[in-house]
Every structure is written in structure tokens, then in C-alpha cells.
Length: 247
Figure 1 (cartoon, rainbow, N blue to C red):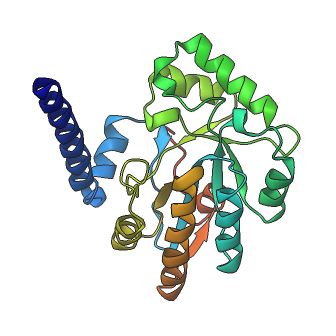
Figure 2 (figure 1 turned 180 degrees about the vertical axis):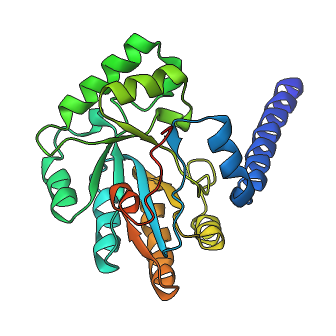
Figure 3 (figure 1 turned 30 degrees about the vertical axis):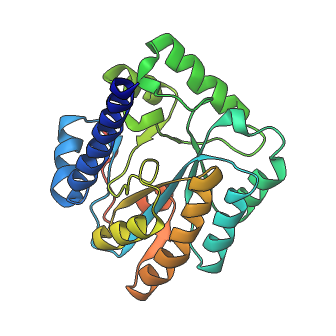
């Protein structure tokens, strides 16, 4: 019994160390992100621009409670976001998606299920992309996709381009899917806000409720600093134009 308990404690400790290690790495995205973009081409990490503008992206919705709270914060602070939605979560939430689109936000394709896209073979990945795209048809046609868990391959980028999609990851990620702290996420985003940055946050359940609290603190502060918070497509339209991923 003691041995099993010791093993459990060791595993928990190891998991915490991994999370802390990732957090330490991601406190320096200014040097890390350009290296990632060069090492793994094909996805957009950030856009070179002198203008004070950042893109906000929110993954894993929609959620009947937290998405509405996030939208309330965005409307209150005149911000726009790209919502990377999981299409298995769309049924029964038409009015919520309608509100999202009416209020000027952008739909993004986060595929049909919450799973790492890199696990799929090319045929499965393409089928998943197409199925998700069709599910969005009542509200529009997304042009941005974000692979589940953020990992991608050359085959995935090729397939996305064949279907007129652009791949987007980001440059400011407070690990909010792993670190349940609104304070940490808020401080991380504000510490690393730069012109052309792409912020990643998450929706759904407690994560989404926490994102709403983060936005309540982050958005007014970014406004004070002179930043506009926009969708990915608007960020890409900002002169000087960002180079297309892999272009």
C-alpha cells in the first residue's frame, strides 16, 4: 500500500515539475517563438508589425455558460477574437454561435473532437477537417484552423492548404489548459504583449469561466497601453502585411 502511494506521489510530483518546466520556458516567448516558427514552418505564430495590435484566439468552445461570459467581456471592452470551435460541441448552441458571429468575432476550425490532430493519419486528418468545415456552414466558412494540441506535420499543412485553410498557433500561451490560475494567465499575457502577438486562451467549463476573468483584467489594461485586440484575419490585414504561413 505504501509503495503504491509513493509511486502515485512521485507521478504527481513529476507531472508538476513538467508543468513548471513548461511554464519557465514559455516565460521567454520573445526568443522562443521565432525559433519554433523556423523549426516548424507552415503555421502562423505572430505577425511582424509596428502597430499596437494583437490577435486573441480562444480554443475548445462553445460552452453554454462560459462562452457567453467571454463574449460579454469582449463586447464590454470592444475587442474581437477568433474562436477555434470543436464541432461536436455545436449542436443545441446555434443562438450562441449566431451571437458570436453577429458581434464581429471569427470562426476557427478546431476539428470535430478534442484530441491531438497529430495522432491522425493524413486521410483521417483530411476527413476530420472536411467534416468540421461542413458543420460550420450555417454560420460561415472558416479560413483558419488550429490543430488539436498544437502539434502539426508537413502532411497536415499540405492538406490544410489544399482546402484553402491557414494554420495558426500563437506566441503568447499562458498554459491555461494546465495551470488553473487566472492571476498567472493575466500576468503572463500582459508581460509578453507585443505588436503582432497572437494570444491563446481556452473556453469550456472552469477553463472558460477563468478565461472570462482573465479578459476582464487583461483587456482594459491592453486598452490603456494603446493596443487593439482583434481577430486573426484583421491582424493579417494590418500593414505591413504579415507573410502567409510557409509562404
